[in-house]
Length: 455
View 1 (cartoon, one colour):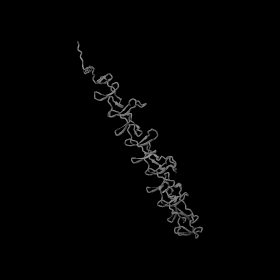
View 2 (cartoon, helix red, strand yellow):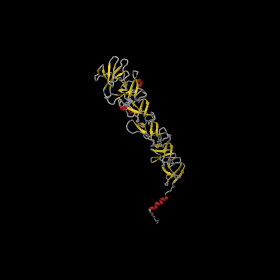
View 3 (cartoon, helix red, strand yellow):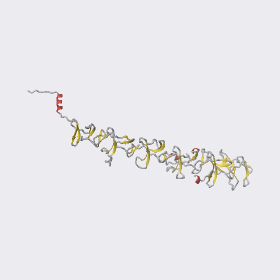
View 4 (cartoon, one colour):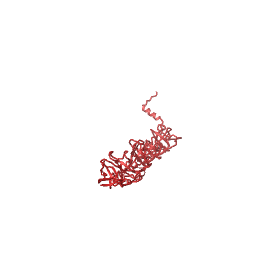
C-alpha cells in the first residue's frame, strides 16, 4: 500500500514559484532597436527608463527609445534629442508637437525653452543676455503685441523697453509712439477720458487709452468739435511726444471752432502746456500775462493781441486802453508812442508805466485813453474837449492846435470868441458868460490804429 504524503500550503507555493520561468531585467537589442525588458519579461512602453549609462530615456508604445521628437507626460511636453535624452535648461528651434502646428505652416520651426526637468516653459517670462522673452500657453516664443497688448516683443522675441515707434495691435494705420518700462510693460494712463497727460522721466506726454503717445494738437478735455470750446482745452505735443511749452508758431487746431486772421499764428504755452488765452469775450486784468519783463494779452483763441485792446474788470468803470504794438511785437507798450491811424496819419499817444492809456493832462498836453487831443488849426485856434475823468466827473478843457492845455488863459479864437480857463485849463467862461454846470462840448478823439499795420 502506497503512503499518501501531505505538504503544507506554504511549501506548495514555494515549489510553484520555483517552477515559474525567471527573466533578466534590462536592455536587449532587437532587429528594430533596443528595448527594455522588465523582470516580468514584459517590454516597457510609454515610460521613462534608465539606460546602461544611467540616464533616463523615454520608450514609446512600441517599446523603442523615442528620439528627435516630442513626448507628452502628465500634460507636460518634453523634447528628446537624437540620443533620446531630454533637452534641459536650453533653448531650441523645433517643429511643434503634432496638433500644435500653425495652419499652412506645417514646416515652420518655433523657439522653445526647457526647464531643468526637461519640461517646456509655458506662460512664462525668461531672461537671456539681459533681455526678457515670453513663452505662450503652447510654449512658443511670442513676438509682436502680447499679453492683452501690454507688451511688445521684437522679431527675436525680446521685450522692447523705452520709447518705440510701432503700429498698433491691429497692425493698421499709422505708426505711433509707445513707452515701455524697464520690464517691458506698456505705459497706459489710468483715469477716465480719451486722453491723459502723464509724466515719463519728468517730461509730460499725452497718451490715449491704448497707450499711444500723441503728437500735434490734442483736445485733452474731449470737447473737440463742441461749439464755443475753449482753446485752453488743447495741448500741443512735439514729434517726439513731449509737451510743448513757451512760444511756438504753428497752424491752429483743425477741429477747433475758432477764427484766425492768419493760417499760421503764434501761441504761447504755460508750464502745464495750456495755451494762454482770455477767459471771456471781454478782456480782464487777470488776462494780462507777464513773461521775461514784458506783458502780453491773448485773445480767446490763444492769439497774442496787437494794436489796441480794452480791459475792464468792473462793468461800471470806464475801460482801460492798452496798446500792444505791431504783430511782430505783441507786448504792452508804455511811454510816448506815435501810432498810425486808419486815416493814414501818425498820432501821438501816451501810456503810463502800467500800460494804461493816459486820460487827462500830462506834460501840459491833453490825452484821452492814451490819444493826444488837438484842435483843427485850419479852422480854429482852440478847441473845447469834454473829457470823462477817471473819477467819474467830466472836464471841459481848452486846448490849442498842438494839444496844449491853456491854463489860466483869457484868449480869443479866430472868430473873436473869448475863452477864460482856470489853473487846470478847465473852461470857465465864454464871452464873459459862465459855463453852466453839466454843459459838454466836443467829444474826444478815440484811440484808432490802422489794422493793416498793427493786426
